[in-house]
Length: 281
Length: 281
Image 1 (spheres, each protein chain N blue to C red):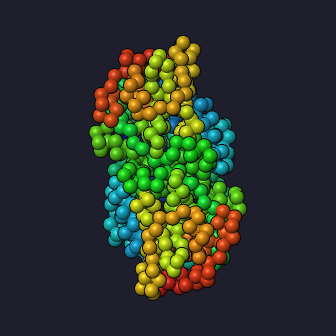
Image 2 (image 1 turned 120 degrees about the vertical axis):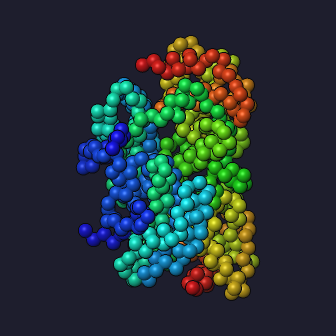
Image 3 (image 1 turned 45 degrees about the vertical axis):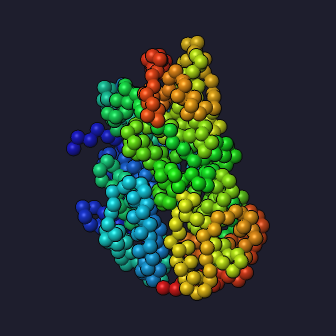
């Protein structure tokens, strides 16, 4: 079987590499039964994971927000090392880290690795057609309601996946979620960034959206390059009038939005600059 | 190992019974990675599952709402039969049915069985202390936004579990969710029912809440017994002024709410009547 994928599971204090098609989670694990766990998706390029540190910071934050037993960074690094061992330098991979509540006392920690999909590579190159969909939540509610798990990257992504299926059904590739009041939030698996008035903008994380690791890296590199950045509440109208709009994520990078709710749009030639900034070490 | 639990998985057109502690899902199954799947929890009593039909109706509805490949009722019944084979008549069990999107083409269908927990039996007998928490969603939004998966019982229950942990942290047992506007919705794993003005009330399902199988059974038995029922939008204030409030679910049955947001409350002696109605065949 030509299975490029890999899996490593934390057992008895060590990372254990297993065949990718071997089941690793019991039916009683709360990660399966309740989506009760957290995750990260880390890019593997040139056989390495240069952004792993940023993702571990967010994974530890998600772990705290869900009151999961902490797993030290060294254990995660050992899992990533076990999963990526022998991975070919020339193939981009997505390494996912999962921490689930497990059964009773013992949480489940694992890393898996698979090649980056053709559709992701195509969207990175050619951009994405996007529809705006409501997420139904009032914009400010998650800041005062920790049980809504704002800011945590959980395994409960059924709505995110359903929104992407809805986008595909209407001829689009991806989604920008808005609050009940029409405030810009985020994509199902990405951060929204737009260029307007000579500045890069992204919505405030205190809306309960995920703090984007790629967005943070882009903004730091842009500031260092003399391109001002701002955290700005926005609406879909702001995206229509922007010079360029991107969906940012660790695997896909900066995907230019080429149409929004069926309206074609350009990027004012800015995508090349954004992608160059993201390619800096 | 004294493991009372059981698991059965659908493989190559048949239900296969496996040891309960044997992993059954790979790391690449979307049910684990994304909470992308649906489930039901079915009571096993006297070695039988008399309410299985009601749960299969809802499971098939959830399957359609998530665009999952349908699994016929006969397959589910075979899985339940395999999981419950040899289960002792004198032990109440919870049989969970999971359908996940799996990896690529093949969905994962399985049934698992475990004894009903002591805490559940205690709450059925002694009632529950409840806190009202916002679910953050605008009341009407899910009716027009199918990607929010209103009415589907999905594996993405991280928020439901976090809300119950929050309840425990403030000295309560369970939760009643309200909409952003303060409309009563449902519990994280239950339907809200209250008695007021000689009538049994429950919130409308078009709020995107789950249609309760136990609530439907109670209302049918109550109507047949001359106790009027109504689908009524309500608020937490309506619960405070009600004669009695219950959280209804298939496993726990009717759990009387004994305190709401720290305010003790009675049940006007009605819980016995509700439980008797639910015990009818």
